[in-house]
Image 1: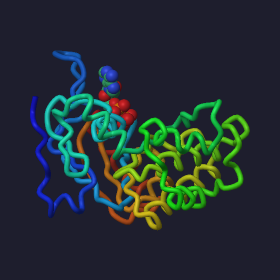
Image 2: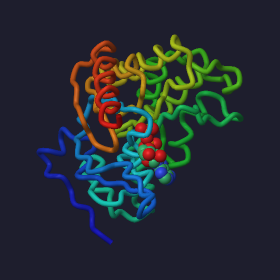
Image 3: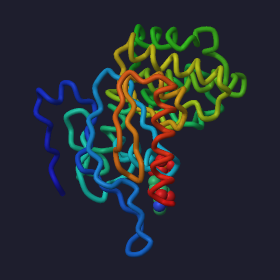
Image 4: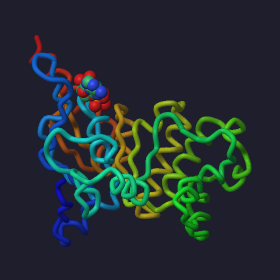
Length: 260
Ligand code: ADP
């Protein structure tokens, strides 16, 4: 079993997660799929990073590998200053529980618990007392103060996803991963959630990595990483929806030309 190698402290201060030459292959021989084909990147602390690319380009695989939900075929991954490739399951589970938050497309709330109980559930399970002042701030940031006693089926889709965002923020994780977090919402509710994610970066200093295929969603980020065929093909700072859409179009045309 490999031992965890820390990133040098000066570098680690700015890096929330890092991938170094990560390969993820599914299957073998003729039918092998290289979902990730040598991806290296740093996720900056206190920034909102979007991962974009066409369907099948490896976005979800990259997110799962960065978050320690899936193993890599080769290469190395760090969360904060801890290398997670090679960590034993128990340590990895503890690291994920203590330092990583998730917001998925499906809201994943427990139907029998009210909004507040859902928000504090991960901390209750971990036996941690929520920091009351922080919790109040998170609840105010996502605008849930008057909905805390409602159960999920008494809330709209947008409100349910706000609960899921608050749940991810409440434990003050080092990094939050979102996999198409607005995929199940109409555009107004989606814009609201993206606004909350943006505010949690600007006002609460949260680090967020979001997988999306939507240029409008990506425009809320500070930086957009583009994947194609399991490779990192571009890196854009200060994106706008128009710039992202334009970049996607050029990739689509290039891919079409390669395959034609
Ligand atoms: P994206 O999120 O960009 O749509 P994915 O990361 O889901 O892409 O998939 C990348 C590639 O890996 C695709 O070709 C997909 O078919 C393949 N893939 C993903 N998961 C599996 C799996 N469990 N088994 C086999 N192939 C997989």
